Length: 253
Image (cartoon, rainbow, N blue to C red):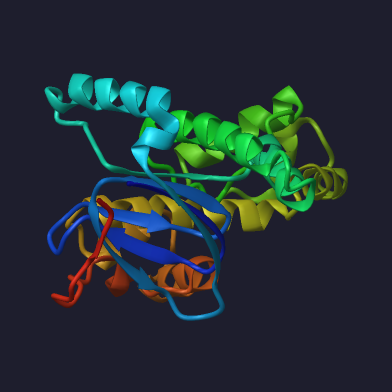
């Protein structure tokens, strides 16, 4: 069996078993699960999630491709049965087609949804998971694109607005308006999101102390880190490292 989780609101924490690899499922993300026992915990707050499940026989060509890919990556130690990536900006067009199919004629919904599954699953299993709280449009001007790449690479820097505006070639006032119009939120929020993304990655993949994570990712205090993680994910840092209770997991196939 296969499962595609379309998570629109609220954060989920998934583990493939009690001691399994943690997969963070943030708002507006897609997660693919293939023949795996999965423990899922919901963060506090409101949730909106759609689950699509199907047997491998329904998508035989896709299943053969995923199986071959897993066999090739297993020897490298990178094989996985759970994969997650953000909808924005990677899957916006695919999600638009899915919404159109669901709202359209029921006569064609099955082939349209299967086509959606083929596209998103193939893209999900290639590459690593991405929390990506600081997603930006793909068609940004080159100067803005270079700037956001620098912020993501070095979120611990101060990033004053004037310096960022100079790098992008704008006055501070004009830069603030342009950035918000293009990205959807302000530059200071983008920096905060980048720092939070950095911190979440460290919390999920390292044993570094929370104060070390906070300073490494540009937060002045651990409280600042805690507040940002809670704002964007509805979690506190300790919940990203908590071992779930030994409950019976959901089993797919």
